[in-house]
Image (cartoon, rainbow, N blue to C red; front, side, top):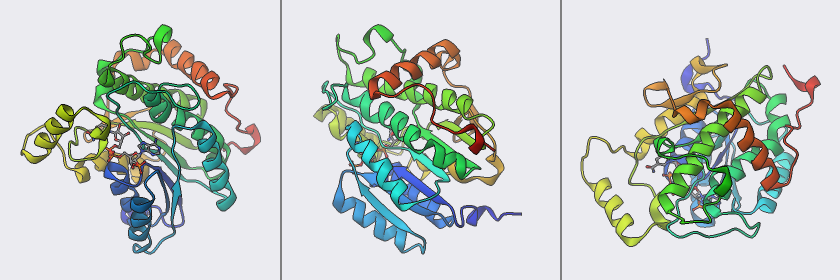
Length: 300
Ligand SMILES: NC(=O)c1ccc[n+]([C@@H]2O[C@H](COP(=O)([O-])OP(=O)(O)OC[C@H]3O[C@@H](n4cnc5c(N)ncnc54)[C@H](OP(=O)(O)O)[C@@H]3O)[C@@H](O)[C@H]2O)c1
């Protein structure tokens, strides 16, 4: 039997947003389980520091400096990764942000949607065949319980009318769950699983850096008080690490995990038409065909 603590020996993991918070914690835990870990983020100083921490765990460690708001950068990141690796066993889409004010990326897309949803969509697409060739492999999408507050409005997906930062963030986290479920369907039979995870409320991370001063202060206060509904970074990362590496979850796909294990997500996430439509719209926004470029012959 595989010992759970070295379940990832010889495996390669890619963790976006591994430069801080839940992503850093996840990256370190995957390295502890034997994986060679690559992290992605914008902050070079923090990225290099985490890479050193990963190296100290004895496995391979890489830092890719990449801003995921840019589709060209996501494509370059995938190409660079493919140039260095011939396998990918665990892909954790953890990078995320929340913005108080509406902004658009160089591609003309609302930024929260671009970073939190479209970057995972495009990166997965560019690495899908590598995942299939490495199967059994896992894709983990870090969502949030806030997805339950959101609805996908296809007539204003990018919140051009009456932008609200929390609404934009919650909608992007709903898109994460819809994406994970649809990806699980499209990869069925390949040995690659896709699941979404809610880390819970972790006020001590840097997620609120784009929020108003009032919002940042409130979160700072939450992080200092021993409140029953707040979680430490270690606790928040736990279900992410589990979804990415627990050997007992081999083959489990299309689920939404909290710290209590597989949990129901919001009713809208089970709406197949919404899932498929979002997939098609996302493909259009990143300029690719909706088909996953996975060779049927490579499927296991
Ligand atoms: N904290 C919570 O309460 C909570 C609750 C539910 C879900 N989540 C989710 O958990 C995930 C991790 O968040 P966290 O709380 O750990 O926050 P965090 O400490 O701010 O970490 C976010 C990570 O994403 C990266 N990132 C942000 N924007 C990026 C961009 N444009 N390009 C590349 N990387 C980018 C950041 O790296 P750089 O700064 O180096 O770019 C950082 O490593 C997010 O998806 C978030 O939605 C958090």
